[in-house]
Image (tube, rainbow, N blue to C red; front, side, top):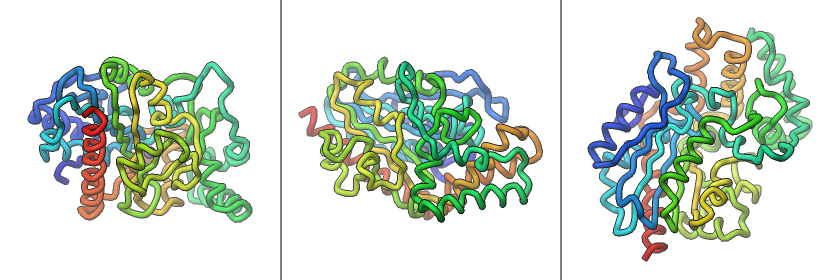
Length: 360
Ligand SMILES: [Zn+2]
């Protein structure tokens, strides 16, 4: 397992120990809920380097809860490997561990508000985006009972939709984000979640002195197994995209440009970051690591959704569904973990090189 962990609690312990050993200063943002083991949930922030550094590398894990197994492992490896020694004068690193600690601990993608954090960074003072295609599929996504028969019937509805409209259209309808079904999947919320408020506070408290910020947000669940797509939220004709492509190479794809494995969506935090950090140049990518077949990932999300909408998350069905969800977002093999670390190391070194040039 090395730097990776089987549970949130183990991941938190490893992160705190590795951060202390690397000489980081630590602070914790304690979450209102508890983990399945009754333990405390928190977003931990490790800072290495001068507090007023001009260039800051920001590594974020657990935006999508259970995907934190990947991001936490990459962060702990970065600390243990001594990568902080590469931060030159004027640079600092800010590692945000488990920005959605509830989802990480409970093996869910969503927050305790059942919200997809990367659909939550919209302006709630305006009407939320429409997703009429999700409305058509909402009932099939979440049958009342979770028998093999009801699962097969609802899967058939989704496959019919894919046959009629194409598989990318199904992915877009389901995962593009929706704001009308609070107990459905890829729900963007009716207001700011705890995790959004916490990330916003961390940015405000820690990054106000920075002129250049390099962001890496760790994700899993889309694309070929072990391959990390570098996803940029900004469109291909923007300065942000050009900077990200310059730092990270030509493999960067754009969500809004339509060449990414990700659906087009509203409300992801990487897209919001340049507005939250308007005083700085922000260069950010998501690393999206492929795991298993997309159909199986959707099955896991629907099972998890049913468990929390109609089942008992602490009952007898929970263990199998939590294991199914974890397996959809964390491939428990040395090969996959090695691919995660190798590609993460490339991306973090590219960001440090970009920041070094930017603040020189
Ligand atoms: Zn994700």
